[in-house]
Length: 110
Image 1 (spheres, rainbow, N blue to C red):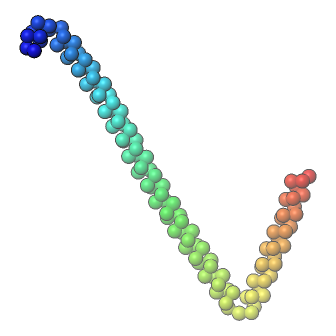
Image 2 (cartoon, helix red, strand yellow; image 1 turned 135 degrees about the horizontal axis):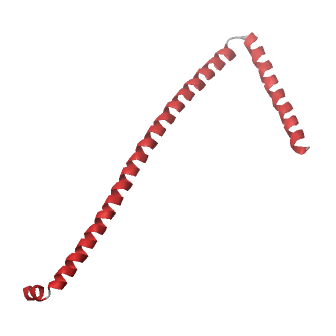
């Protein structure tokens, strides 16, 4: 095999040239993979910060709903005067719902 290399110097140069091309191809693929991993890392960090923000928002919404429910249950359990007020509020909301339903149905049909 040593004779083959010495007799055919062009073959060795051709193999060296092919190796250099493959090395440069691998180098470009590796740099592209590095760019992709950096982009994935950036996207993961942004997604995590977005999810953390959503968690904070859901926590505050839960606090608001819990407070509203406790005030509502306190109002219902406090006595007859509040029960009367609660009935008026419910009747008013139901009436408002039917009026808005009637108006919307007239607008969409006309």
